[in-house]
Length: 407
Ligand code: GDP
Ligand code: IMO
Ligand code: MG
Image (cartoon, rainbow, N blue to C red; front, side):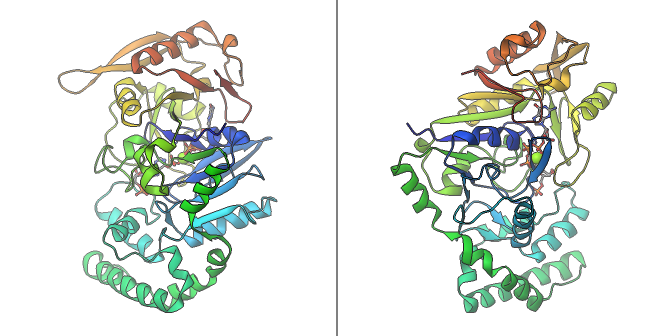
């Protein structure tokens, strides 16, 4: 029987979505990205080799898995071409298994120019990939879309109008260099093969697969607290990272999804600016960063680290109708004497912690729940009770096989 699954992050991104999507893809016909762009960095480790994907769905390393990029994604053709080339060099091929929606809004070099110029002034700490400006143009109904590559006359007109507008913004508001329209058109032309090879009516294909009884997995990027509507605004990304984003970003109704796997680290991290109530600045922060190798997979920036915020996590479970919790990076807590988790905020908005005894033994690589230390089991059990959702996956290392499945 087919089972359609959504996998998404419940924190500020980097929860381990890439690892989990890759691990689940064994049983799956197609993996679909539905929002975000190459601001995402999803890490997969197979046979000791690490791969970071930014745009390609994280099922890509399974040769039979179909890869879909839905209309909700903002697409940099340069980034996509580079990523596909890198994967092809590793022997991963995409013939007849990559499908990109014609309705994807394109990220042009001038979007990146605006993002960088703006972030210098009004710092959010964006990834500098042009994500915000590209979504602005989509909503303002002036975006150039992937399908426009099919008609060179329309493409030229739309790019000229849009880049002229970008150049006014760059020169007048940010005192920055304008972009050459001709160069951008030439660059787009050099990526026309991506359109010729992969442009698709994504909704139609998903309908067909669904009629054939295939299981489909939808892969979120970023995390719930970075959602444009429900996150820590304005320190957020520019898309709906929460469960509703699948409906708009692919074109399926909410009932199409059977299972929603929400991923949380066993602690918390955040890259970029913005509030982070349980952030630590002591030796514990350093130990989390060091043991968890907490550096951004896209920008290489150090991630801010802190304890798990169960109040925020409980909200994210409801916000996304999560059916299954996936707890990652449990092994990172292996050498902590004690572990804190935030269970409420006091009247001044500060976190109130419950302290748990650490387990001070190795969980790294454990793939049978029974072999976890009792204190680790108690920590997990408290989390499940607090948020009202059971864990069905626990991750104890970056590799596929370092995973506990509970059902
Ligand atoms: P994503 O954006 O949600 O896909 O996550 P990232 O790939 O940006 O960051 C997660 C990092 O943690 C990557 O370096 C993964 O290889 C690593 N990772 C994932 N799961 C685990 C785990 O259970 N334990 C450890 N130690 N590392 C993990
Ligand atoms: P994955 O999919 C962590 C953060 C940026 C910045 C804010 C806005 O790997 O979990 P943007 O470039 O999107 O306009 O930046 O969002 N951010 C992420 N943080 N993981 C990500 O993706 C992120 N994508 C964006 O650091 O604070
Ligand atoms: Mg990431």
